[in-house]
Structure formats: structure tokens, C-alpha cells
Length: 240
Image (cartoon, rainbow, N blue to C red; front, side, top):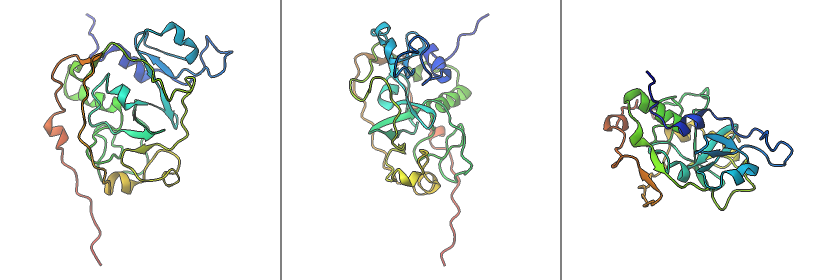
């Protein structure tokens, strides 16, 4: 007996798809990197393939330090992004699709519930996959965390012929560090992430979307026990 997956097909493929490889159909063309994901066809495409996917739902994929990110505004139309830490690159908020390799330094502050990566306060996950994997481990059905979006076009601005490889340093929202201060690898120091994060989390304004609606309304928040999990108090050196 076949057991249906608790995840939408497009999301399963998104987590494993390889982006920024040359398109074999347009290998002779310039700027032929596959940095667009078609949700209807569940495949990655290059800008030259767009004519065959004009009426489809399309996601623009960005890359930072060999890891794929998508705009938070786009992701929020498809999946519940609450408690996933966003970052800022090219003046746009983005979220990582997959879990990244762990750094050597372990933070004594707030960490991802799945992979233990250091996070700013009030966030519980470092990527979409970390949140979904955690939810899969504590409950069965996940349809309430995914949304039905019938219309998802590419952004009219900020898309340079489909080639999006930002050189700016990725910063968490609210960070005041400069690109030179983060070492050029999108990582923020331990003191910023784990010990002295002072970001004020603004209340989220939920706008009405006529084309995108929840598959089950209302969408419940993650359990209170998860949000109010206990944290170890950092050990501070005595005052001299």
C-alpha cells in the first residue's frame, strides 16, 4: 500500500533540486544558469526556458556562499515561515531553503531546534527544511503549514536576466555589522547571534492575499511548549 507524503511534491523537490547549473537545453546561450524553480513542473529552469512556463508558478532562487535562498515574501505565500530566521541581502529579506553545515563555534545562546546553529533571539529555525523536519518529528499532518497559492510570478524588479548571484554580505535582520565585520561568509559573530542580540521583533502585519489562501484555516501557531522552551543561562564572568 502506497503511503502519501505529508509534504507537497514541489517542496520535496525544492529541497533536493540542484540550482545554478548550466541548462543543457540552452548550453550555448549566455546566462543559462538554472536559478528559477517551477512549482507546477517541479524542476529548475534557466531564464531562456521562461517562454514555456509563463503561466506557471515560479520561484526566483538566489545563492549566497553556495547555499540557496529565496525571498521571504515569496516563501510566506507557500509555507508558514514563522520563527524561521530571515536574513537581508540586496535589500531583500531571504530565508535559507536547506540546513547549512554547522560552524565549529557552538553558541551558548539561542540555537536552531533542529541543527543547533546559532540564531538571534525569538527565532527557532535557521532554514525552511529545519522547521519542516522538526514539525515532522512532533506531528503527522503538515497541510496546515502549507498554503495554496495559484499565482506566483517572478518579481518585476531585481531580476537581472535571471542571473542572481548577489555579492553583498548576508546579514540577519536587525544586524548592524558591516560586510567587513562578518568576514565575507554570511556569518555573524557569536556575540551577535548568541549573547548580545538586541533585535526588536516587530509585529508581523498579515496582508490579505486574494490569490494565496491557507489550505486549512485558521493556521495554528507552533505549540507554546516549543516557543517557550527553556534556555540555559549564559555564564558571566564575575565583576572585578
